[in-house]
Image (cartoon, rainbow, N blue to C red; front, side):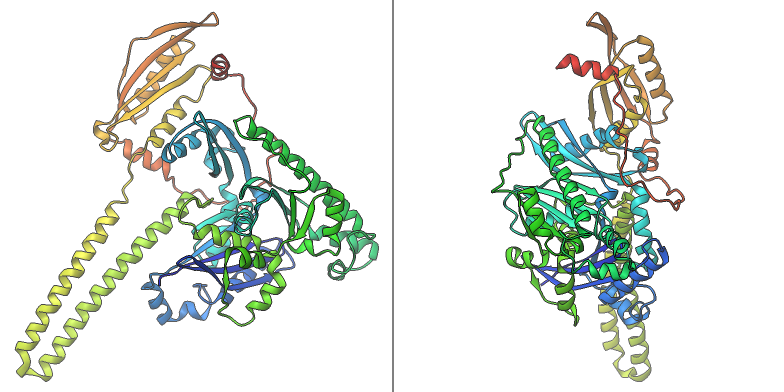
Length: 594
């Protein structure tokens, strides 16, 4: 039975973790796991070597420099293996921005994707050209839709992809850590409103689950390394000794209690932020967060959760039922995940590190999903993977053809030299081989046709984006309606939209911009009419236009720009200043409608 295989990689502050999951029918198997540490997180070469060793230890990834990479038998077997291993990477919550987009129009899944793409341009904390974004947690009423926008910088993801790219590993999905934690929690019997704190070395990921779904998340810079620093100074010892001592000092004893007080303070802030976030969602027509002490739970996991007595102190201070959460044990009990290690020593790794594997396990489970997968993989990388897969199919078909032709020629030569009296039999064999050649050529033709289908096709989003760039000054012109017909034939496509403006000159300026764009042609404005709103004269006009013959090429260059040189910079952790809200002409219209 064919299996889906996923390798999930989590590159943390001081450790890198990797797990391998395989799905056969409805059963998920955890077949392998490994963990490696690197003392100096700022040493990029040290991190690279550690991750390379981690991937090589898994045994089935084509890591450059390993024996398997240079073994031609393994390369040949990989070329013809249909059950490819998918690689998924975790992205820390601290490098991700989230924003609830409310009051969106009700739409189908295809329409909602375009609507979110347009709305995101005004909500992203950085330029849209620098951003990668997706969305999840879609909530709809008969009147409106609401989604949570997830975004990060392209350079942030590229820094991680470069490490794996140098090893020779191609990533097919990039999953934010809070999505991964929520995925594991949803499979772990999380039925009550539950707060989850994954305490890492430098960061703590805080998530709130309600109804089996992620409702809120944040990351705060406080973790196990801070406790080590708290202990090393008063104990007058080095960091290594302090790291060992923190496993034996109670969270309520001096000097560990200072760290505990600060940690609980951050938990209180996170819980308060959860309540505020749910109140914002309620403005879109959804229910408020209503919790009681008896139904709410707090789960602690990660290396920092191992501090003695931390669970009981959190429960007493927060008045919330608190417990240690081991994702491995929870998945075995509630999700039926079967652990079948293929390498000796995996059981020991799971026993030692099981409470720290929530993120890589969730990344793997999210990657196994055929629908509703959340990923921040750049479009360029996704397109490269698609092209590589199709090229591999072409090479496979070509290799089979060469093999058939070579076998035919070699067999004919040997038979002609050694068995002249069987010429007629050989000719019959050759005719059979010719048929095989014809089938192989037909297969090659199909694969080449698939390659031709990679040509860019215009989508409504291309036209929406082009018009949005021209209509970027919303204080002068508002775009009120939009319609496209016959888009599958760009030469005959017709575009119709309505404009409202505060002046006749602004409309003329935009019509001139359309004529000069090189994308739109045959621009035909209708009759300009005027209306009065709040003693202001508003000009209205309907515009019709068509696409130029070079529009397809122009949109393709816009959607798939050439990659710019990467700069070795560290992306900011979270934006500190929200985008300003301008009192624009469009805002005045919204107030009037209300």
